[in-house]
Image (spheres, one colour):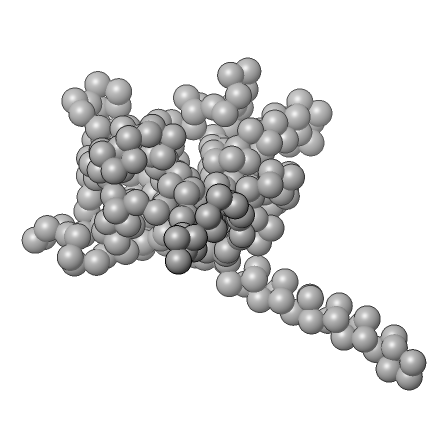
Length: 274
């Protein structure tokens, strides 16, 4: 059949946010939607559908979330590396060691470091570029780590594998960040606008960002990003601090499923005798 169905996953369009606390337990809260936009082409008639996936990958001392094209060999190899697949690790390598090394490169040398801070990201995107020949297909990342009191923090990782501090990463040129946070992905501008407006109106005290406030801000920002048609409704949340990494995506999903079932029961109960 000349009009055979072709399935192409073009991009993961998403909303990702990370917020670092500045009071209480030193922590970083990372949140994302879980939507993947899948494009199908049947002959000359393209269509799209949505699927739910987690865009947060975690280790014992780190959290990484991503945006960009996830249907490339380069991205696949990088995520398999992050998940500890030995086929993509050299002898003696572990994801923890390489991520820690990337953070060390930044903490010790900052912008003066020669080459990319995180070589694996640069190599991955080099492979994506060879495959797609389009800079819009390259992946960007949010990285949160807590190895010890010296090696911890929140960074944006650009397409070339460079670590960028929150204050130097902006979705909007006019943004003035009064605390450490990163918004990125297709819903990044909406989230950044929301936070900046909340700060301007005094709804957020930028000197009192504890875990509770940061979690509330992450949820509220992701809700604002829902108006972006490429951002999914279901949320995924992870928190990292000196105690390790905790993930809450399954809790959120199960509570939504339970709420939906309860709503179904309430509606149907009204019509039992009808």
